[in-house]
Amino acid sequence: MGREVSSTLYLEKEERKDINKMIFKISIVDDDGDKVSINLPLAVVKVFLDEDGKLSNVSYRNKALNGIDFNKLIELVEQGVFGELLNIETADGETVIIRIE
Image 1 (cartoon, one colour):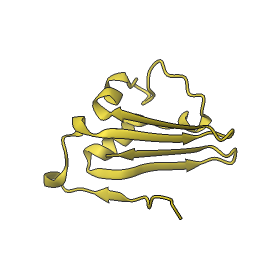
Image 2 (cartoon, one colour):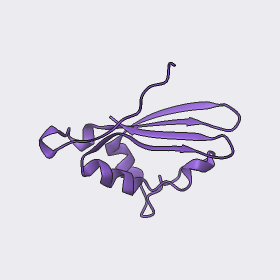
Image 3 (tube, rainbow, N blue to C red):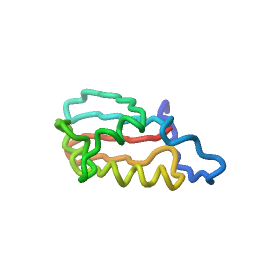
């Protein structure tokens, strides 16, 4: 019904792209229905992460982003996980989807 089928794949080492050429795609729908799409090169995300796995100097208006450890997501990508990494739907009506492409 117009919704993209999500898939998460494991890629063998010889099938993987250079991790620094991959893109984090973050889609957010907040409880007011506002939609935000962010496409960040993984290399940029790695530069701005603090030791807690948060993007430094970024305030999260969306509560669902507060608990995400981006260091752990990067570890998954380094191990070969590709596609949808995270899909959160809160009781407040917020949705966060993170994909790696």
